[in-house]
Image (cartoon, rainbow, N blue to C red; front, top):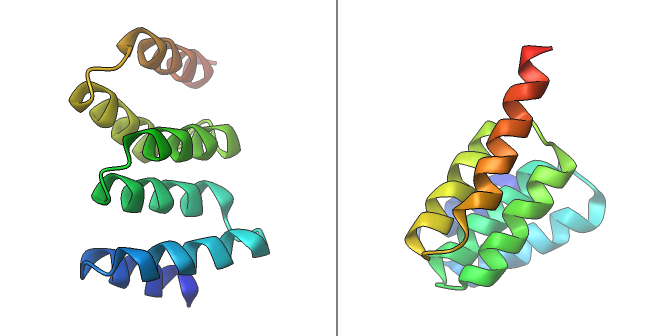
Length: 100
């Protein structure tokens, strides 16, 4: 229920409420990769690029095969003119795992 509320809050522009719900949800251990990715989206909407990047990294650490988080991380890195070499390494690593 908190996850759905967080998404609704984020989409409707109530980012502080979204962040609150996601923080409470993360305390429970519920699907950490999804919660971190949603927190990254909220951080992006708040123009907090570093927190956004940190949350996507946490999401990928929790679930390295999370294609959505990886795609969004690449988008944020490109928009922020950050180091894309690290992103390319993550893509290559993911592809290597899928090829096995």
